[in-house]
Image (cartoon, rainbow, N blue to C red; front, side, top):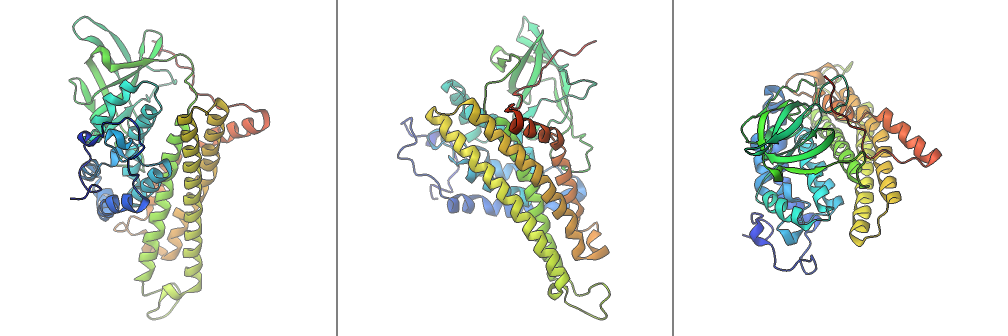
Length: 419
């Protein structure tokens, strides 16, 4: 078994503490490792949509291949992918099934924060777990009349803390081994990280959105969950340190949308190539040679290419920021500019993808709407992903940045829920 295709394990970590001398994996090597898995995931995408079957098995394939450890440096046993390499592979996964790329959003965001953490101990704690296949899910948001956090932790003499509350939009948590959540400790917001299987944790598949149905973005309930002291990761003031994390989170969503456009193009092409009749054409015909159908597919391909290019551009901007952060030359202005680039891409990618996932129906008339094909899932998935972090708010932030130099807020004000 070659080094490339061997299971990723913490025991592979070299004794040195630097990446120098470790062979970087090429784009081709990474693609060879993961593309067969992406192809298998794509084969079952329509069936999963029809049955609303959560992709536990497909997530397991990715775990076993080390996909969750893509960004973990080689010296820790990970694959050490650059940000452009990572988002290229995530786009391929999103093309196979944008549900699966989306459900990993919290996992990769959490690890990216650990990569940028000043404390080596936090990397030593998390990276071996992920290299051995652990996944991390976010349970942050709540459904309430305000944006206040109602979930709480209180002191418990027996274990340290008791966690009580309910979260929604818990994307990926139903697949996760560890949960990252927020809760109020009195009047202060705390970040928590704990095993998903602790007694009192209930994860529900009750997400009722019309798209991204298999992301597990439903309810997570905490009923007097006993946490140890080490499960309370940190406490926040009113703002977070400057970082590129919001840009990273946004780009995961944009990648899922771009993947939906790619998948729509792929399926439209396959549909037309096998079609033998066209509207208002007597007898058998060949729509693939129809100039009007060719124009539709040409437009589809162009829209998808433009979305891909924007994703790649932001990934490269993130990589530059990451490199400068490692060199100690990143500053608040750089982080703000990188975040704005992601928000600017958001404004355009949404429009491109929504055009593409609507236009694809023009290749086949009423037959393209058949339930067996589920071509509508691409529009529904893209529209649902686009509804996260509404673009209209980001558009105003972009304008304020360019006109007045106002940087986007790092963290909204958080208060305990009343009543």
